[in-house]
Length: 452
Image 1 (cartoon, rainbow, N blue to C red):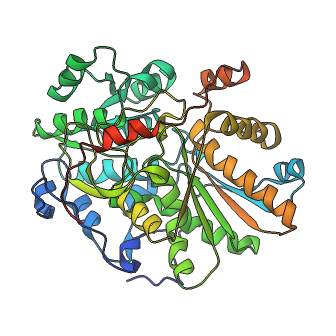
Image 2: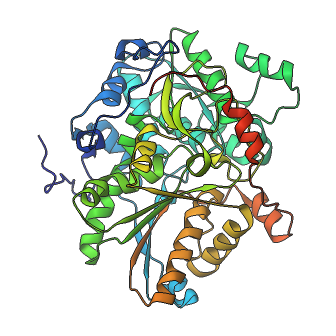
């Protein structure tokens, strides 16, 4: 229906399609499995997802049309601008040309509404009354609350407790859009109660919050579960970022040498990079750098194997880089990056050597964020600051080698609700933390021995 060299655009240069990378993988993605090792069938997912999202999850059709109702909401902030960071370039003294694709201009302030609006639409269309979800730093929870408000759905958010306490304004934003927000682990679910029995002061994790949200959805007929990253259909919706970027770079007369983004589950990085992956597989020299925290080094230290996506083992087994589903990360300020696994599609490409991964600790990340704020004027989210760090490092390499590379940053969100983290950094109270190898080995003992 659609041709790659003719991406359909609206009157505001808004892509009218999403790109499905599954059509162009060198081999099929390893399928999700049940605990007994059998393959999960699409109908097995019906208790928690609407059928159209299940179809998108397993589809290998290259282009999927975006419904007009979704485009109407997207037009509130899309297309997002591509800025050239000239002041940052000057401060670094680099010959590199640095750009950032600014997803912080969405109403909730991040890239997350690209899929939140789509998921709310498809659920509403199939008669769902309420969506249950988890959130780390609050970007996803606020995006889903926003999406649900536009389509008349109720929204329940299980927010990781450490972020619930660190970021009260994210909670208030969700509540303003009509969501009910709970600090996870809670006493509202069996999964939460089990965790609190073992550790009454548990700070929570995305794995725990996912368990609570999935249980909520599975035990209420009018409710479905909504996930903000990791799954194929989520990454599909985010490719509107990279499709816009392709057209914007053409206008600028540029081709990217380096694409970089932060990775918690992988959705914003995938959204930026996936439309360029086929170009790289065809021989274009594009470096794609996925950046994570040393406190949660999934891609850089985890094994590539099947594991659950949540602590209570309610989700299917996914083949991914993982630190073990029982992993509970330290309370670093990049809350959106504290997940034990990553998107199977992203992990597959890392395993094939198409995408590279690196990890940074908090202080150099915030140093980069402050430099960006003082040159480009925008305060980045702590998550976003990770790839700003990598872009700066690559730009400094260009200064040393005198190479004029084009570097593009996935600017996934602003840091206006993260001022406590900046206060900690500015007062020298942030601690750099590398997750100990022995703790990783301990968490990996519970990984199920299934699959290949």
